[in-house]
Length: 346
Ligand code: ADP
Image (cartoon, rainbow, N blue to C red; front, side, top):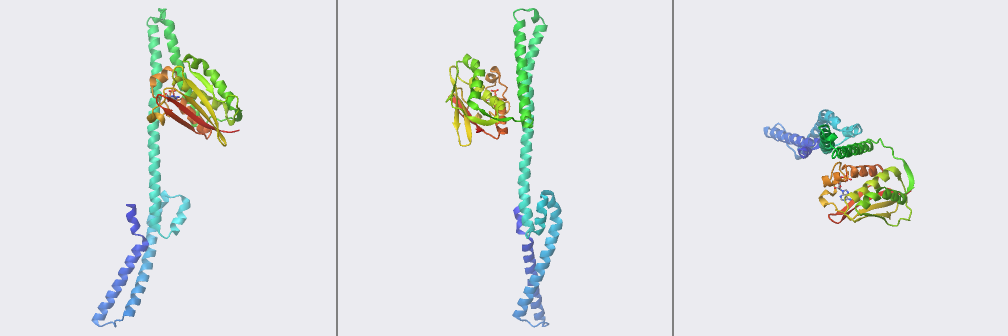
């Protein structure tokens, strides 16, 4: 529809009207000559037709432009930015300009609508995920307490066990709420990053120490390549510790018994790249782009059994993005995965 309008620019319409006027003049002169009231001459006909054409062309062009400005400008003002308004009035081809600007405006509005629709879908999914995630441990706790109240409390074989299970579920709810709180704080820019220069290999060793008992339970070995080579980076140490903790924890949770987790540090020009690699269960290609979404888990029961909330990688991504850095994942199903992220050098 927008393309059709372009054909009828004021210039083209004025040419058409001007040509008609010139033709009419010629016809009038022919008619008058036929009646004998007028002496026919090619040069007079040519001059009068040209003058007629130019005169009518100018008048209709000015009128059309004025009309278009009066009609279109109020509408154009709604869609255009104030800085464009003056250039619109001065524009030689108003319809063409309005046409282009309206087309751009339509694309922009459509994109905005798409984004709002996505946000709305995301918000609905998120709410239903949160309530589902909290409902599961809550109902378990309710079940244990009811059993205890209905006589289980006096039953030595179950009372302690059920209380411990209820406690485990409460801890699970606390982890979910803490993770949600972290995500919302990062998203709302409520977490101030405390940048400092620090040495990253010593931080990796600290994380290994925190997780070595968990790794040992599954016979998983933790390696750092070139452990004595220092690499200084500029970042929030505590937040990068959270990133490393989550990635190493995942490599253990989704690793294979007696497998390994290996961290490589690659020296890039102005950055370093930290790669956390495992020989675990791996991730099918179709899931790779979804694993950073909140609550996305490939194997829900495996994730829950290992205490996962489905929020770890989402937090990792948020932290790195707030550092203006990126995270990359490579994985082969059944062979292993590798998560790498960049940091600025100190
Ligand atoms: P979770 O709390 O479930 O571990 P994450 O956000 O940390 O949540 O990870 C999302 C999902 O990505 C996990 O449930 C798991 O399916 C998959 N995943 C993450 N890390 C790995 C890994 N190293 N190997 C295989 N799968 C992984």
